[in-house]
Length: 228
Image (cartoon, rainbow, N blue to C red; front, side, top):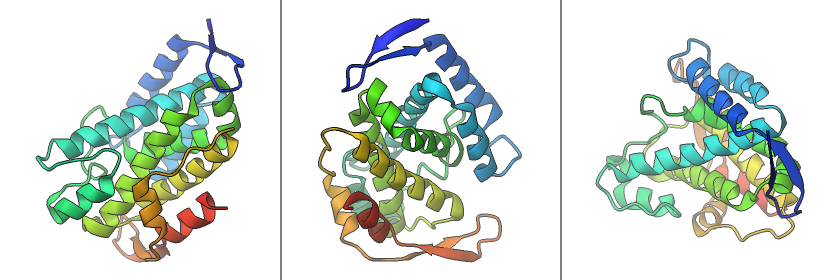
């Protein structure tokens, strides 16, 4: 067991790196595309696994790896990629790009399972996150993924389904909660501000039947959450 001093408040948190590695291994082996359960059910169960400070730290590690994996998958396709502005990338390449959300490498965290769970945990425990860790990189990863998802819908021909809409909604909520908990709120990145000026509602489909089951307006959701 080790003691770390992390967050902006200078508080001490008792965390166990060994426990965090155990949680990461369990997340990889129990959950993901290879499991038979619905993505939404898996995400709920995975979030419940990440309790306490070690679970919270593990959630931030999942987000970091998810953001890194998404960037690597985008960059590997041969188009210019700006990690801090996926909106520009999608505008430039359009439907020639494949979304890293739909083709998940073996061993990677699934965006609709472990990543959704990690986003949920960091948002629900935003105040504790700010106490024990530097929240800035966590928020950066969340906004990167949000930009990737919503810009893919708008410019990449990626069809929104219930799982990706849930991920987007959780990313928006987590960004709101973390920003609210931070003593010095950083400015929103340009692609997020641009998306907030939009007012387009996308059809959300059932991934099993491809039927439209609702609508999602990313710009409106972001404005209400991040400008309040």
